[in-house]
Length: 110
Image (cartoon, rainbow, N blue to C red):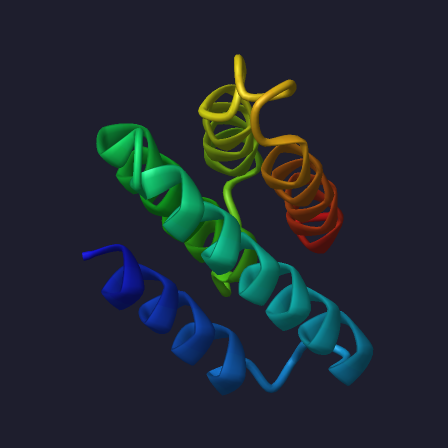
């Protein structure tokens, strides 16, 4: 399920033509790192890993929509950020990656 979710996000990002190539590359790199981190987390915290992948999907969808709704985008990014709370010590790369992803998606919504 997690691999499918990440693959769908990657596909969505690949199809966006209105995004700068540099931004698309950065997002895909972050997503690649996130995938590895989520797979590691899933070994011990399966439901949390699925939740993070789901919120990443929703946030990416909201940030890349043609008709953006700033409230929905903010809410989805806030949920994504809160989905990694408590993992700062055990999975610092995961938290850092999600935070970077949140900032980037938020900036896309401007």
